[in-house]
Amino acid sequence: MKKGLLYILVLICSATLFSGCLKHGTERTIDPSMTATMGAYTFNANYIKPATIKPQLADSSTTLVITGTDNVTGNIIELRVYKYKDATGTFSIIDGKSAASLTSAGVTSQAGSGLVAIKDVSSNIVTGYFSFVTLSGVTITNGTFVVGKPWVY
Image (cartoon, rainbow, N blue to C red; front, side, top):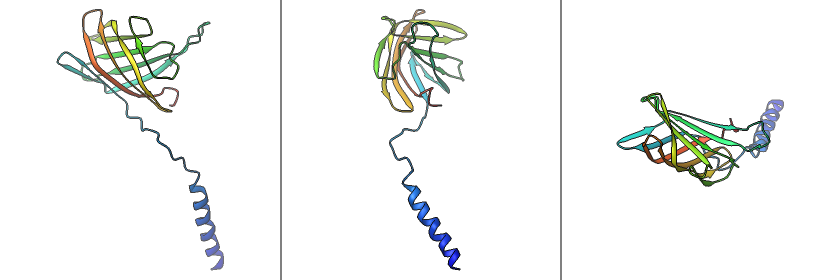
């Protein structure tokens, strides 16, 4: 009986001791999304894929690539931020600091103007907004995205 009580006491003390090892913080849960407006159509991605690309050249900069796919229409929006440094900022398409494209009905049109902005970077999430006009004349406005950092997965 005393041995059983001793085991229970050790178990309770251990649980109390190790409960202080739990990580408490303000980490946001990854709930990926990408939306945008194209005229009367609202793009709503069902699948969002973040990635980073590091070329094996002398320039060791990193490119952040965010691809959103609307599985209902098949439309795809791809955003790129060049020389991404894990920080917030506004990146102009005209200045070559970012790029964007829209694929619709199997045809891809690059952005001729616009921007991609990184609004918030946490330890596991990148959020931002975008707008651009494709070379074929399609205007994309009110774009937003929330993605997990690709190097967190």
